[in-house]
Length: 271
Ligand SMILES: [Zn+2]
Image 1 (cartoon, protein in one colour):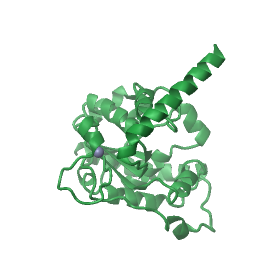
Image 2 (cartoon, rainbow, N blue to C red; image 1 turned 45 degrees about the vertical axis):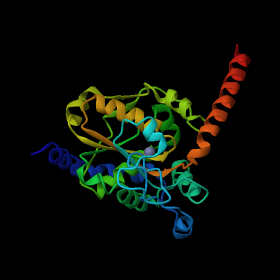
Image 3 (tube, rainbow, N blue to C red; image 1 turned 120 degrees about the vertical axis):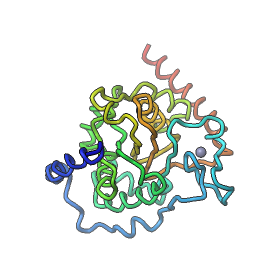
Image 4 (spheres, rainbow, N blue to C red; image 1 turned 180 degrees about the vertical axis):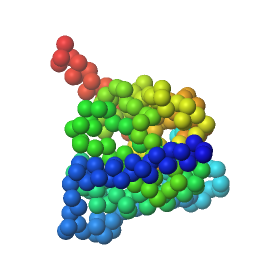
């Protein structure tokens, strides 16, 4: 029995238990959900895109083409893909899932993740959700990435693995931070638990998160997984923030100036 078969056998036994537990934790589905209306304005992501991070290109520029960001500093994950753009058309559906506890779209989300990850999912051994820090998980009652990862594992051959990756440090919210700030914020925030290292050794891993912004969180997770012996790490997200690359440099500079000023202000106020 191979690594994956053994794990799947255990998982299929525990699956019923997990499901039963979920029904208690999660609120019942909204019988008046306007599902299809919620999905009307979604902008789906697909090829052509950057071969590594999935940044959409307006037209095909040849196989293996990379965006400016990945050319300048390639991330540690092999590739990342998102199902749709995080914008006005998808914000409500994501936020109601993330903070409102609405899970009626979960199977649709999983199908979209499978579509977005079709290139690397067939070779995947494990699906690993990006973990939340303990206190944040308690506050939110559940980790939305865990729900996405579990739903995806039900429609693929990869095993669901929630115990391997831990967030060992509470990080500030990534919202409103510059790319450099996001990177600093998640450095050293994740670790692979000792007991899981043998299991993950040589494995192809799919990281799951809800929203990708700069990819800093995924990069930090990929880094510790690879250091622990994983063969390859790809990332799958429900939605991705798309900023115009030409204006990104300017806005980053502006962001970090504002942030520095804010930090100075806060620290001055506290001291
Ligand atoms: Zn890229």
